[in-house]
Length: 350
Image (spheres, one colour):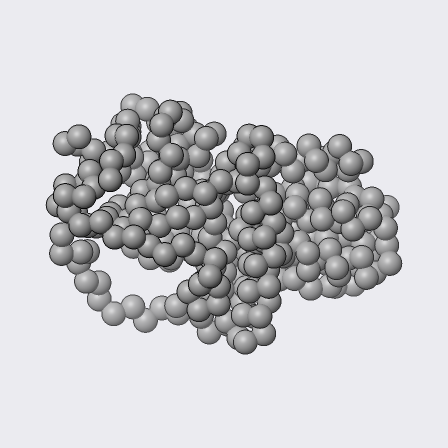
């Protein structure tokens, strides 16, 4: 197996972006609440799975909204969940206006890694009840099917890539016992048929020296093209966007629509005074695309994804608690350089 060497160096970093994932221990909040004279469908708290679950989650919220009888519907927020839900509402026959403080690419979702990760920090294991698992599987399968229909579209908003998990001989050092609550891991149990079987390469059969390499295949989103396509489709079929900031539920009263879908992600913590929404910080180091490099890598707690809108490197930390409770958005140059340097070290002898 041969791969074109990646030209990675800290001098090639063009940007550092930070994403705040909206984690809820109980999983996403998808429910209807009556606020004043408005029917408000809350749809937020998807952790690191917002893009991945957007179509399935949006289908549930769309059904709730349409059952109110309204045909003029407001969507609050224009990130992964809000934008996808707005498109689904249109397809269900609604007239939709998106109200948001910011539009892509300035929303938090635009700083996501952009990979298929439907159970990434979706809930704590203790809250993965049988009912939740049924809902999660339905959202996952619905979303997966939608993404398959987007393969091959102009701009490649969605595509499959091969990614290589690389490990040093002997593996990582064993950590001590961890008494913190575990995050739910659901893919292997509930949707194993949506994954392609991994293939392992012994040393000498790959370009990474005496390390072990394992190949996985998964979907990747080129978020610039993907979000632009969704927003263009929404506007082309009569959708409206209006820049507006909401500081509390009382502000909903000023909207003419009687049915609202609240897709504010981490913003719901302040908007709804919902302290069940916990920030999980994630940072990307960005580089220009490199022709011929269409594979991903994971090595020493760093992931690399070859998006067409720019190569991305992320230090993921030793476990899913890395970045937990951190709402800081200031770029960390040292972390970015560590991520790039780790991946670059794989090609030091190439």
